[in-house]
Image (cartoon, rainbow, N blue to C red; front, side, top):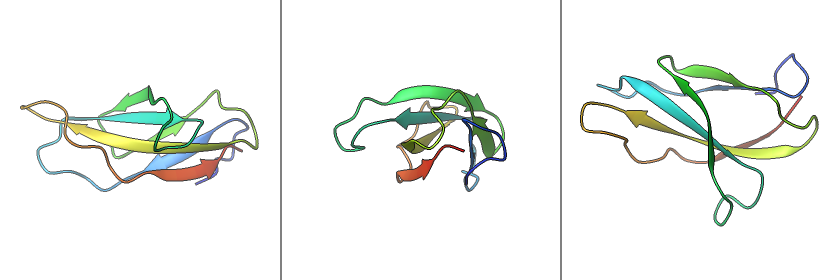
Length: 82
């Protein structure tokens, strides 16, 4: 969802069983061909992504980290930075 703070997007996702941490990735281009950059690591199921260009669209995905390593990426969601 759009954050109350300029240049930010607030993300939340469903908990993954046995996940210890979550990694959040962002891309500015086409999600199918764009370059994904990790922008946050969180032990919670929500985070605020900052330092985005206000009004610009971004795509996001999340992976869960557990004992075995990083799981598959979530579905991609897109949103506009506040």
